[in-house]
Length: 471
Ligand SMILES: [Zn+2]
Image (cartoon, rainbow, N blue to C red; front, side):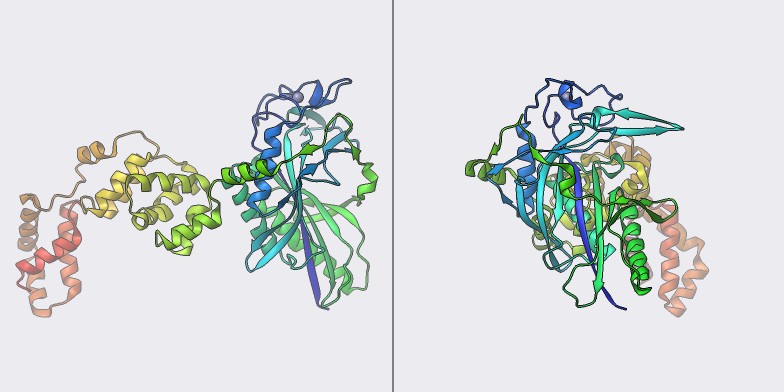
């Protein structure tokens, strides 16, 4: 039987702020366990939360970047449940009046509707070691935005590929907007995925199955594919889908039932009596909108129309904001967008993706690109040279001069070599005179290049050779 697949996403991202959401503890990853905690964020009696205004502003900016409406009054509520990583036994969150409502995100050719973004606090972290479990409350109280897609509205996300494209674009927008770093390996962005199937063309929704706290796009992709196949098989066999939460085991490549899914009522939400409603003015929204830096779609247009880059090159450069910022910095020194892009999409990215980091200064890189453009260094030797100086702090120009890799075709040196090769390879020269074969000419050019150790310009050597051979 054929089915329509409906995928919903709940995406959590930790906001980039100096301090936590309701106290002045540091919002910092990697501190020693339980050092960024205070009576407020661990919920000791009598401690009162104070809202971090910057966290609200960051949430509004996230919403504006995604075309959301901003509620002028937002309310914080308590979501009550027990878990060892939540020492207060409730999480401050938002249910009835979130900060952002009704957004959308373009995924391939679909505008995927998004219901809301709300601001809440993160929980602590359980650290398992052997048979013991430790708890670190440093993360407890860190501001977290939760985005919820609206699977009740069309169009739907229908495949693992679409869900990953959604997450990739969302992550990119958050990073460019400066609201979150979304470092996946630090758990700064996590997603819950819910999936339901219904007979093709049916209007009624099938039973939803949720997979919680997925990290890493690879496991999210695998988990979605697995879940779609699992539900198909059950439905084909005439079975019923249980409403439940399943846990994805990345190593085994399968999911297993965790618990039957809870509903919002189960959490006994109620307005937090310690926190006032948040009033957001038109001026606030206008000011924050103005403060938004250029976002990926806008930059993409500029790269393609003004810089004349291909869509592929543009996407490759923009995929990583650090790379895109570095590209702009190089461009400011040497306004040749295409020439610089060529080096970025090949040499620079290969090194960064290979784990070597961004190990070159903009001055050195621009000097090298310019030298190649001006034919002062051969492209091939420039590439080798770049690999050598990557991760060092040498001055590219003096290093290149010291190594003698700068081309100098006007010098007698190259002419001497040319004559030498013509003399040594006289039989080849004779053969060329008879056969006029381009391949033989190229062989002679190669010999000259070898003698000059790549310093000369191959094209110019070829011209000189032709001249000497009277062509
Ligand atoms: Zn605190």
